[in-house]
Each structure stands twice: as structure tokens, then as C-alpha cells.
Image (cartoon, rainbow, N blue to C red; front, side, top):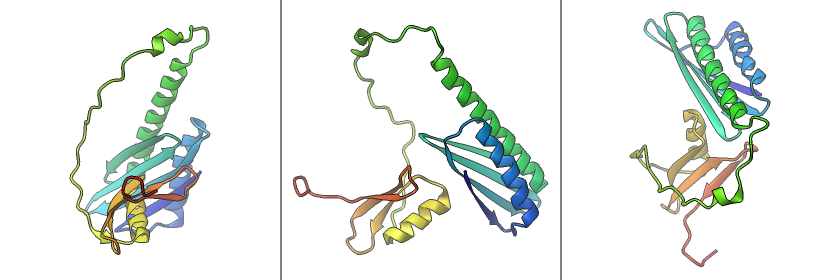
Length: 177
């Protein structure tokens, strides 16, 4: 697992780096398919924050720990992420218990549920290059980012693929593929 550590308003020392590696690496005992982890450490006045984001295949986990000590904030965030991973793994295990009858094909003929939006966000669109959009997406810890292409002035979407490469969605007129 690749662990990326970012410090805001503080310098990442060897001791902090080692401590974060030790805490975040514990997540591997729950899943073997964790792709990478991102740890954001920040200091504002007397408050230390540690945010841990773990990207596994088909799932992203996020936890935030706040304390007066940096190490305590890292511990809180690590404990929260461990709890999330444990709960998710137990949910997966209970879903595939042995001895339960599988669904019969007749049960598959259900009507699709209507689409329901739980979050609608307004996004400020800034003209930028695809490289700048990828950097912004990585900086924010997101899996996709919408931006206006600097040259064509078209709205594009950049996204991270499972193999850590990037994909780019560009608008096209119907039938011009």
C-alpha cells in the first residue's frame, strides 16, 4: 500500500512519518486490496488535525481526528478508520454467509428503483489544463474533478482509474465518435 503524507503548516519529520506509516499500515489486516492511503496533517493555533483517507477497490474510507497533540490526533483518526474497516468487513462477511440459499432468477425480475439524489453540489468551474486539473484533484483527495478546458472552453471531467492512471471525459456531438 502506498501512503502519501501531506503536512499543512507543519514539517513532516522522520518520527511523524514512521508513526503514521505504522498506524495506517494496520488497515491492511482488514483488506488486501487497499490501493493507497492519504494522510493530511495540519496545525491551526493549538489544534492538530489528522485526516486519513483510504482508497480500496470500489470503496473509499475517511476519518478525521482532532486533538491538542499531533500524535493523539493521528491515533484518533487511525482508530476511526479501523472501526470503519472492521464494520465494512463484517458487513461483507454477513452478506456471503455459507449455507444460505442463493437468489432464484425469478427474484431478479424486480423493477429498478428510481434515481434519488442525496447531495447536489454547486461547483465553481475554472479554466485550466488537464494536468492542472489532475493536480487539483489529487490535492483535494478526490477520485474525479470537473473543469473547463483552457483551450477549448469545454467542460471536461478527469478521473482516477483503478491502475492509478487518469481518464478524461470530453464532450462530443452525437454521432461524431
